[in-house]
Length: 289
Ligand SMILES: Nc1ncnc2c1ncn2[C@@H]1O[C@H](COP(=O)(O)OP(=O)(O)OP(=O)(O)O)[C@@H](O)[C@H]1O
Image 1: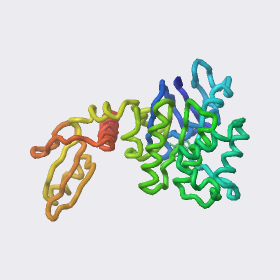
Image 2: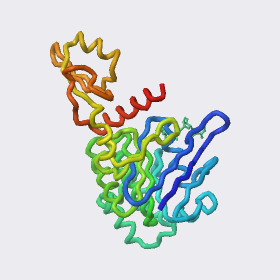
Image 3: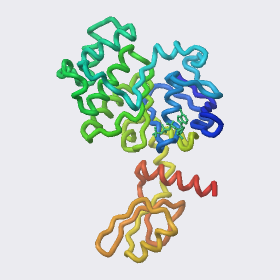
Image 4: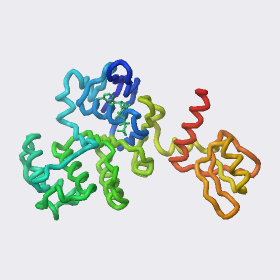
């Protein structure tokens, strides 16, 4: 559906926000993971045709979107990171406004979408009185107005409380069944249970594009657990990558990233996805050193 071919985006002479990313995406939810400044927003803005690649191309259903932006715009919904609501409009009026902008004439569609995001009961309340999660859900409803095939959401869970986070995650997971949903985050747990694929970005580069299961499989044998005394822990800290340390009186329970058993007494542990990504990152750093 969407082909990203060696896409580069530079700002001025010194900043390379995206440095040659290639990806081929179909239906499903893609979790775009990376720290601040990794290039996630810039990549998403290029997909949404808000900015153009400096080189490379993004092809949607066979059409280069830089040459014909209208082709993807008609079939893409976008929820930007800094999505704001108009203070004087109710959720319903807000949707009516966006429906008019997008040429969506069916009032039933607005009702349907407000129900989908569970805002139908508060549709007449001013959107400015909504919580962060409710605003974000209204943002998704507006992004879905044209019944898009691609939904791009930039850091939608930032600042949400755990319950809102969960509700939002489930909503996106459902949408990923028959659309391409690209969701950026720097929090792995936001996407680990719902993403069909994870795209890991760092410094404008794509480090990996895998299913969560494949990432976990690759990290097996690289994450270790151990229980050591406090003095040994102080020494170990300087020599191995400690992923997690929990003091238990005089002892410390550790999780360590290491390509093989770091010392006698360490046992191979089942990695979490977060640990898998950290182990992968340390391995890449060591290869580069
Ligand atoms: N308009 C711009 N002009 C100059 N530099 C920019 C511009 N937009 C982004 N950058 C730089 O490009 C790099 C990638 O930024 P981008 O916002 O794409 O990262 P990100 O992964 O989305 O980070 P965040 O999670 O903080 O939004 C950063 O170093 C950023 O400062």
